[in-house]
Image (cartoon, rainbow, N blue to C red):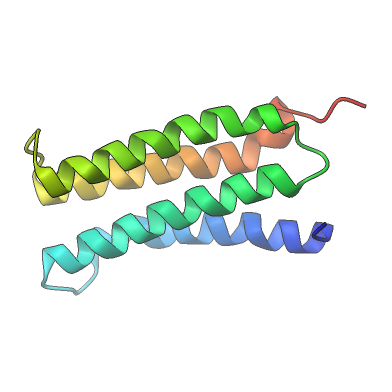
Length: 120
């Protein structure tokens, strides 16, 4: 079982990655596909960190994983859509959609103790 400090570091890492993703559209990277891959990697990293934080914390009920899993599933569907292009979404719009998904996940990370406290 991770220590409380480790869990706080994981939660902080998820928030910092969310902030980092917010500046990707303005990053001095010319290749939009590199931005897309970087943005998607951060989105999935925040989802994984949030799920681990919720699962490993003794203060959060496992029901908190349900909305996190739903958002993660939407992220996967959106990523598949980008590869097979069923619904055309411009690259910059996709970056902002990934940012929104990441922000929602980070909010679940930060608020899961309040909304899903472990029953005592």
